Image (tube, rainbow, N blue to C red; front, side, top):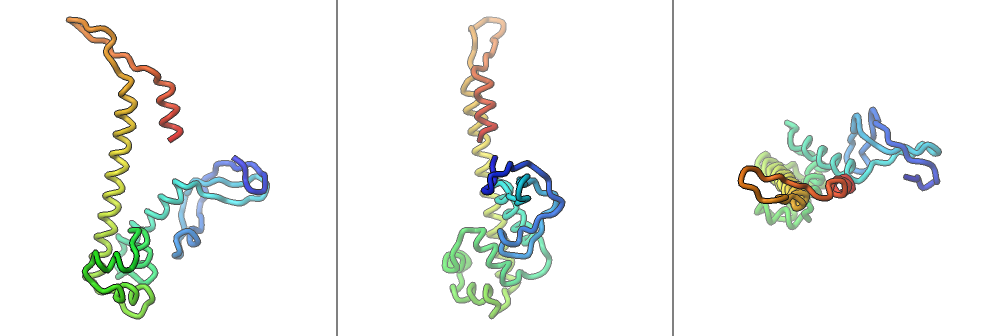
Length: 173
């Protein structure tokens, strides 16, 4: 792969990467796979790595012991893909309450903190479930090439067609 400067991008593992710009919170990722340009030394995270980083930040917020700070509550809301109004509706509160947490005018209550974290965990579980279903669909598609060779009274030999092609498709996905 090529960098914008025309240099070659090489795979590296960074001891530490400042993920703050991507997360909108002060965050450092450790031991993160990345691409580094051999010419300009620019570092880029691949999309899947960046997406995983965003989810790991969300999980870290859900697990922290302190009440969510304004920017953290906003982060979880955005991770849910919800507007202030949509989150307020899901929590049966006023939109202005969510806005007040996010701008620091009001501290989130322990009950609302718990509900927001629970919604985030539910979202993570739903995404995990969707990923498992997608993986199962890939496996089922790969198994679509499995068929019986010839019926036999004693034993059936299974034949898997196009194994190389199926492996290449899985690695490309």
